[in-house]
Image (cartoon, rainbow, N blue to C red; front, side):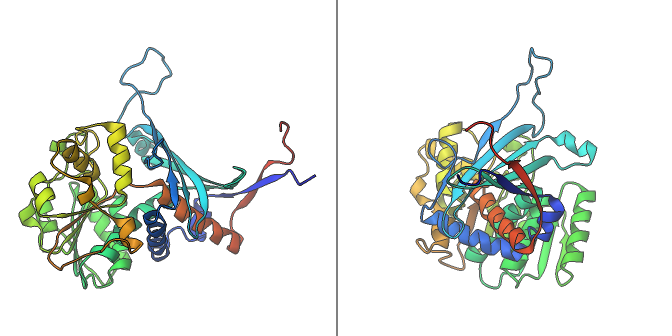
Length: 376
C-alpha cells in the first residue's frame, strides 16, 4: 500500500517575496521562455478552444435574492487555469475576486490566490498568495515586447497611467532596455502621478523622470509607449492616441483599454498579439462589435475582422517571434502595436519558478490535505 498522505506548500506574500516573486529580471527571462513554449503550441488554456483568458463570474444589476452580490465597478470573480509545457511542465489556476470598494479597506482592488497541482493526480503542490505574482508577470510582458520588438538603443519611454501595471512594467522596461534614459509620465490624478514618479526615482536614480501634462506629450518622441489606464466601458472613455504623435519606429505596448484610428491600425501599423489565438477565443465568447465592452486592442481587431476590414493572418504573434518562427522588428521605422490581454500560462510559468525557488530555499509552510482520505 502506497503512502496516502498528501502535503502541499503554503506561501504567504512574505514567503513569495523571499522566493523571488519580485525579481523582475528573472520574471522577464521566464516570460520569454514561456512565449517560446506558447509559440510552438506546448500549452493548454481554458474553454472549449483551449485558448480562453478565463471564466468570469459577474453579477446582475438587481436581484430578487437579498444576499446576491450586485454589479459594481470591476466587481467579479474569475478563474484562470492553464497547463504549460517546455521546461515548466506545470498546471495550475489563479482565482481572484475584484471589487473597487476593497480600496476603502486599504486592500487591493483584486485579491489573488494561486494553486499549482500535480499534472497526473491533481493533488495540490502549492497554494500561494498571488497579487505580486500576477502584478509581476503582467508587468514582465511589456518588457518581453521591448526586448523583442523595440528599436535598438531605445532612450525615451512614455507611460500613460501611473498605476500598479505601469509600475511593474517600468521595472521590466529597464531590465529589457538598459539604454533607457528618459521616462515621461502622464496621469489623470496629480497625487498618484507624483507618487509613481517618486517611487520610480527612488528605484531608478539614473533615469530622468518627467511628469507631462497630456497623453500627447507622453507619446511624442518616445521610443516605447505603455498605456495602462483603467476606465469605464465605452470607446469614448478610452485613451486615444493620434497617429501623428507617434515617433517612427515606436513600440506601443497596450495592456489595457485603448482607442486608435482604425485606418492607422489597418494600413500603417504592424499589429502583434501576445496570443492571437486568445483573441479568437474572445471573438467566440463576446461576438462583435465588443470593443465598447472590452476595450483592449485585441477586441478592436476582432471588431475590424468581423466587419471584413482586417484579416487575422495579418496579426503577428509574440510567441511565434520568441520561438523564432516569425520575424521580430523588420525596420527602424515600423510602428508596432503590441496587444497584451493577460494569459493564464503567464501565471503558471512564474508560479512554477517561484515554487521551485521556495523548495530550494526552504521557504513556506507545509500543510496537510489529508493523512488518509476518508473516501476513495
